Image (cartoon, rainbow, N blue to C red; front, side, top):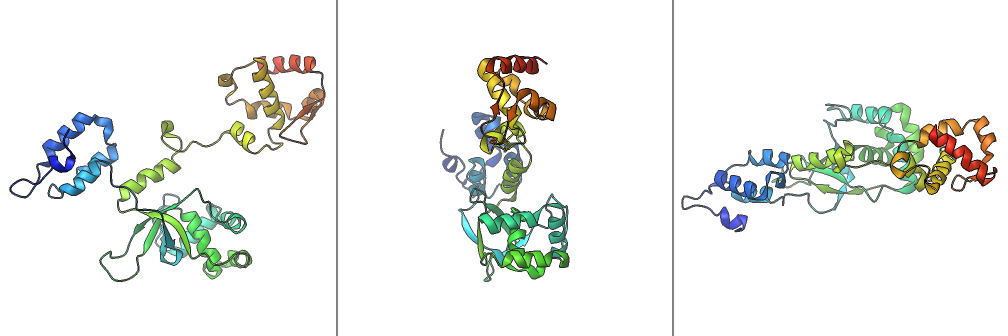
Length: 293
């Protein structure tokens, strides 16, 4: 198949024949080749701008490279889905502190810095043709940016939070910039935001860890006894991995009681290695009853 650039070369009159080629191109590649949101965006592209059409059709419109974005050039997102339309910065900060645990996030940043696995996503809101410095609105990462703003300047915190941020601010140097990507196309940014915030979405989005995964990564006493029993039951063939799914917290509610702990003679002082005082044969019998029940 010829390249899109060659196929969409301007005609003698200076404009490409976009619609027929669009139909042929998408038909040849299959409907799934171009995501719905991009096809909808393509419908809005001017036929005269065939270069833009090519980039969208071939999926080459992506975010810019990772850059250091000056914090003092970033505005909070006024239409953040977390709170709906708010145009007053102080009101946004108040909401994020009250409802979105920004103080706790700021405390974590003081202890561990910002998460190096996560970038912010911003759009430019200044006149790109102007001579001034770029100004951005943060669409992805509002909690992080808000926390950093408050650490850099506790005076913008609401009065009842100010003292706490002053104390945090004393423990960390000024954070002048944060790594992120600048998006020219807002639909592209929305697509990736939804991938992060809308759950697994059949596998295309972010899939959170369940109780089992959380315990494997960081064992605590919360589910330690049940986890150890399920590991043993799976090892003995009393249940399959598929049947084990979703049973951890239910089993823990039962075996975590004082009576059950006494019967099992369970010692979970080391959550990563629970010890049972019962003989193995007795423990296996109890385990069969628990699993069958």
